Image (cartoon, rainbow over all chains, first blue to last red):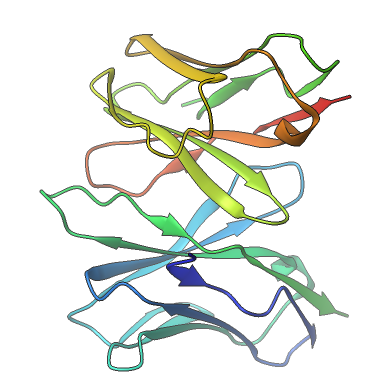
Length: 114
Length: 112
């Protein structure tokens, strides 16, 4: 059973508009959340993270929102650029013994059209 | 730093053959992870090591899969015998303790 769910396999957005990628989780022990970005023929790279003590974290055009009561997080990209076209993985982990071993979702493929 | 290095980048083999995937983590990182990416399951954690010791191999699908880390700078993932359903992209990643993971470029495995 998937503990981290990305229900939209793909998303298409016009350049300059907002991209919103969603992620749901089921394990209430998860308290650290990450987004990774993956280009074709490359490994995933870390994008942004958020701890459960916060409900928002912003880094440039990228903002992650966390709604703990709904067990939901989202990644907002504003404005979207063609170079943002990639697969985005949501990941979540519990703080067990000080180590963060994440569980990944299946990914959402974002296409930003010029 | 060169980042996480994986070899080979592509592997095509026939069913029943042994396959060995290799990984060199980033120097100084004490965690090493092996993942498999498929369309159906996304990114699955197969096994991870801490200070060269296997900590959790519950993600290894079958006894046909084995992984070793003989030293801090090298790890292998072996599949013997390989089957067509093993076809996937296999990623190695490393991290420093609780830091975020750095992924290698992956090995695309095709088993005919």
